[in-house]
Length: 53
Picture 1: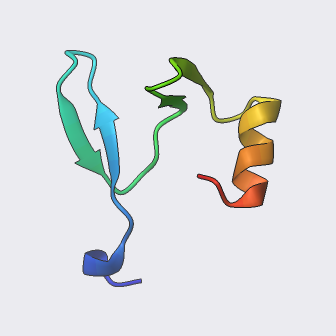
Picture 2: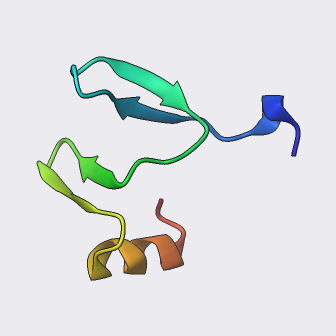
């Protein structure tokens, strides 16, 4: 895959500053509902399987 076409993820560093990465993080969240969790939990795996993430 071409570097320009790679998906970018917005991550937060330990200092709270956002940065872009081509590799996804290990924790995801839905800010509006204040729901956060690990990508390997059962709910996240179901959402990933449905194509939601």
